[in-house]
Structure formats: structure tokens, C-alpha cells
Length: 181
View 1 (cartoon, rainbow, N blue to C red):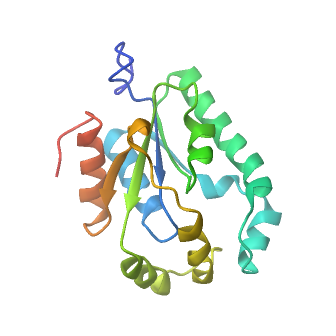
View 2 (view 1 turned 30 degrees about the vertical axis):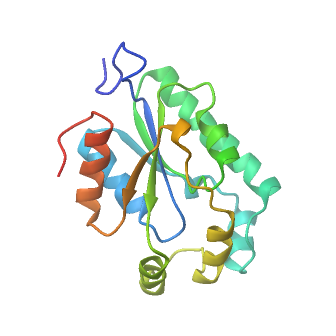
């Protein structure tokens, strides 16, 4: 049995969705978390259509109609991981409850890790980020639609001020998948 896929459904973790606004460190943290656990990693940005990437590059935020097929593709990836009993870590902004519900609903072994950070720190990170299709100008739209996870979502909430390895270790520890930092 793969690590994290215990027979106890209340303690089992099959897929971790790392969420947060653009610039919160999702991709870096998720990559480190997957490496730490020896799990498969995928960045949800890889599932965006070329048209949606072009829309964001042009400074236009995606709407719910744009996001629906993207979320469905990520959910299919999650289902494939769970069906194969191969744990994974996926990055997805998942800013609204409805988006997280699309990824978690009916999947008892999917857990959310929310990277929560101060706007000033995130703006500073975005100002230095290169090579990403999401312009810093869309950060306002991300914060405008952000619905932090509610207690009934059982999300792991981690601040982003620490380095990526420490954040990954904290997530793993809080999910019972390893020791903390």
C-alpha cells in the first residue's frame, strides 16, 4: 500500500490539492511536498487551455464558465490517481468553495492545503516572478473572489512567510504524513 493510503478513511490521504492566490507559492511548495512524500506532482496550470492562458496573459480573469472544464480536468486527474491508488499532489488556485467542492466532493481521501499570505508579501513575490502567464495585475481579481476554506472543509492552513521546504514539512506533518519542520 502506498504511503498515505491507509485503510482508515478518516486518516487516509490520497491526493493533496495545494491552493491559494497567484504568487502564494503553490507550485514551489507542492513540488517540494510531492518530492518529500515521494508522490506524483502536477501543476494545475498545465490543464489550462491555450485560449484561457491567452485570456489571462491579456489581463482578463477567467470566469466560472472558463474554470468549469479546467476544474473537471483536474478532478479527472485526481480520480485517476485515486483509482490507481497512487497518491499525488496537485496545484489549483481553488479560490472559491464551489471550486474546491468540485475537486473534493465524494473523494474522502482528497485534502486541501491552503497557502495563506499577506497581500504585501504576495505582491512582492509577483513583482519578481518571471515566465508565468498570469500577470500581477490580476491579483486584485484573485483576492476579490477568494473564499478561504471553512472549518467543515478540514483544510490545512499554512502561512507563506517560511521557506518552501518548511511549509511542505508543515503540511505533511499536519496531515499525519511525516514529521514537521
